[in-house]
Image (cartoon, rainbow, N blue to C red; front, side, top):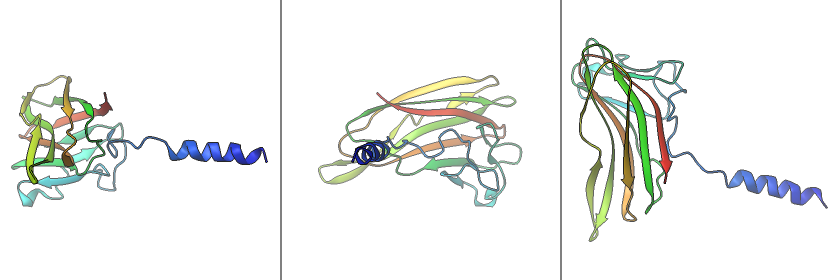
Length: 171
């Protein structure tokens, strides 16, 4: 009799474990092409697909761009797990190799207003990166009327960008 409650408590604890907001947000998991698992990759120039310009090293660094890049790279995760009506802080470290590059990391979601969906972008401004690691962060007040949040990492330029330590915390 005493074993049953202990087992139920253990199972109950496992069932209530918090689900991570992002899948593979630390970029340690990668596929056989060294692309980050759990993320989708799109190039604005379709000829760049499979070019190997969006890769993850073994130490959790996402490298985007480089010589030969035409257009932009978008690495994104649709339907991230945000709770409506909560506030979040997104932070990451980034640096450019060479003379600099352009990067933006932003949230896009649909906001229902008067029965109609309106697209909302948070932190959509481009950042000019230079050599040397920089830390960035932004906040999101996710509304109770928000739907379908996406996290997007967008890179442009011929110099590679390295991004790491992407974290999301609920405040």
